[in-house]
Length: 177
Image (cartoon, rainbow, N blue to C red; front, side, top):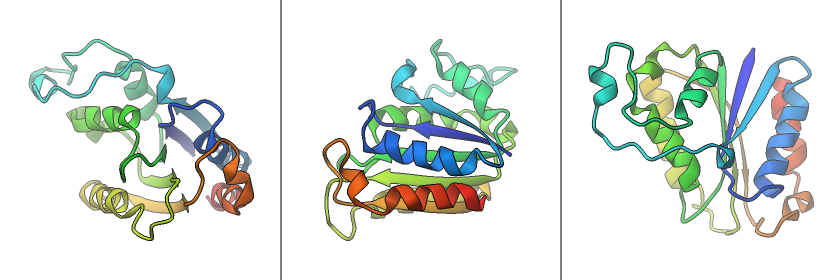
């Protein structure tokens, strides 16, 4: 399987990156895994102009690095969304990439499975609720299979995730695919 991970952390080497690395360690034993750290790409937010719906080849009116990400998504069988939680939402960088999937080109992608890796500093039981609701709506709409989730609370500073079982959970999730 070709697995594409969209990692939304703007902080290099932080808890989200560590969680992604653990997942890769497990999944790469049987699968090809590629990580796209969205912080390394220039992706503008969707303008809602719908030019992509009107163009013959679904070309977006914006000329940025999203074309590179579309190419990677076009060969992925599974998509993993990894993000720190900011104000009960995915990072803005990752949200821009997801919103750019408003493009009908998304219907040509061979993605059948998804997984979710989230890291948040808060302890609130409902910390991930809004993201999980959006995630479930996407699963339903696109008829995708949820391959699993690792949701980590109480990790704020770099390295805090090492004090949890989350890294082991991410390795195991990757191995189970």
